[in-house]
Image (tube, rainbow, N blue to C red; front, side, top):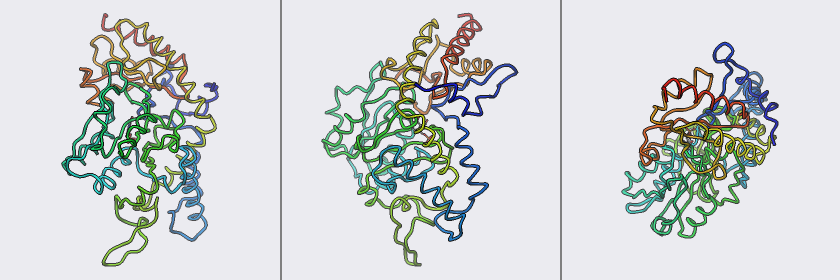
Length: 408
Ligand code: PLP
């Protein structure tokens, strides 16, 4: 088990008070996580000691910056067990990973009448790029439904996943229900009909072991900022033969081998997909985040969050009128999206903030999911390596005060 007090000492922001005598209780890691000192120091070190563009200079600090940046790529490859660092494309965030595949792979491989299968619990990042692609191509988007418990309903999988399906893209962990989806089973089913697979790992890579070779997915995307790293850097993993066959997404410096006034030829992967000066400090910061999480141990991270989730669901069940959406703790990551009677989630979140508690209120970029539940919004508390049971108790006590304020 993690030593949470030791972990908390690594996150300087947690030492802050929101109001005099009221400490920050940060329960919004699913939106963006806090950063440990090691990540802040790695980025500061780059700017103080190595700041230079990468892949270009022949002078010492440029070479050192290039080495640090490419080492970060190797660290990410190891983190998700990618066969080769060349299969790790640095993008801005998970969203850009989906857009890159939707344009680069999608333009070349999707035809009119083809089907793209998604699920009803997707984040907009894994919905809108495919809807846009389908519109451009005259393709059809279909959706795997979820059950009232927030689990994927696999009873009609055979009807939805057919030889017409060219791509199946789904989230490994829902950012609203917290559902841990059966990724390996879904990928195997997609392979059986010859569909290409893409996994949204935005909510899994920060919280559990992700092994792309074991999953056997074709593409996988996640964001640095949800896993202790900085904003502005994300990862797209792809199988080598697919990445090599794909045309570039954007043109510019670094992604070319040779340019003439008549045209250009492309660099090797991964650089073929990284036009222009990359997010260097952010890449190095992500490398430090990967080191940090690896030192904690992703199995320990997952086990601790499972413990917290069970604790939280039990504690929240004491609040009358409160419903947590999604499956029971055993099938769920560290996310509790809830409603409290018919109070507006924004009112709840504002009152929680008075007690220093940061939660997210809204549709969490999953409008179709909320629509199916007949809701416009939920309040979401999400947990990470620094969350304590005392913070969950503080959330529950504050929710009891919210009930009192509204005379429930
Ligand atoms: N997918 C899921 C499941 C998410 O939770 C998020 C972010 O909330 C994203 C994709 C998109 O991440 P980003 O906004 O960093 O691109």
